[in-house]
Image (tube, rainbow, N blue to C red; front, side, top):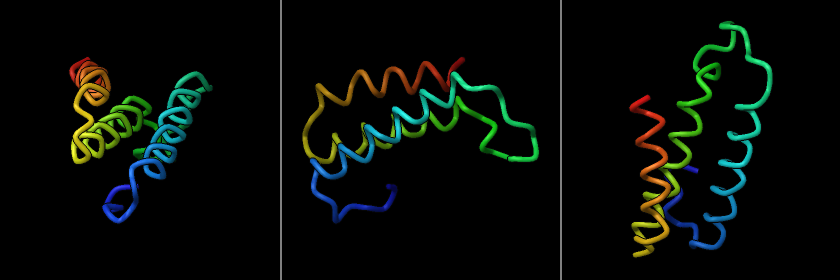
Length: 79
């Protein structure tokens, strides 16, 4: 999804929302072994998905919708 500035917001929103939903689902699954490298870091994946979606919303002036996503992402990365 990163680098997809050509996408309109509704298409991007759908993709980001699915990405966030998948990241949340994975967070509830049994952990992966370290053989999977950075994919093991579930918090990183969710925090990044939240931040990227918020960034896109900011580009389109949807600041009120972006703020909770940024706050959740920040909380994940500060934990």
